[in-house]
Picture 1 (cartoon, helix red, strand yellow):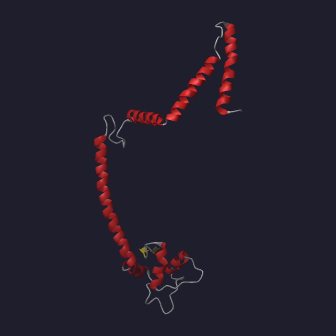
Picture 2 (tube, helix red, strand yellow; picture 1 turned 90 degrees about the vertical axis):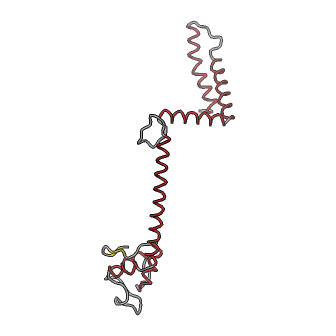
Picture 3 (cartoon, one colour; picture 1 turned 45 degrees about the vertical axis):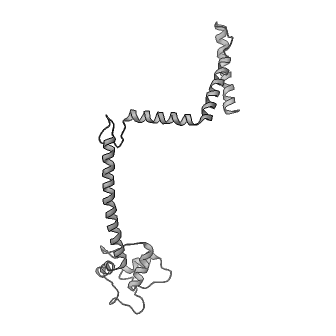
Length: 192
């Protein structure tokens, strides 16, 4: 929370109201937290708790900032900041070690700027092998699709069985193919 460029509070929103109440600012009935906090920094809207005045409650932006710097919230923020900086140093070393490992593992022909260790063709090959292995694991689907393809091949081939190789056979084949396709569509998808 800022007041004329001075940081007068930094922390969880739920803690802000209690912090300013502890400083000596009064709560008005039916006032939301946002309105209350805005009123604490506005000289025209602020009200002090009974028995308190501007003499013993920080009222200027500078006084509010120095009161915050001495508060428990500021100490907690400082500790969190130090912990964060220490964790960032650790993460930075981990990131550099990871980048070095990726650079060492890159295959020939891969750009140094690329985040990948394999080129495009290597990635396609790895994905094709993975997909093939996944298909082999699903035996039911593999056997079902193979059997269905075999049956459909026999049904489609049966449409051309014992047809003459003359123009008469061509006429019957051309009429027969749409009927076979319609039959297979009905078997596969059901009635349309």
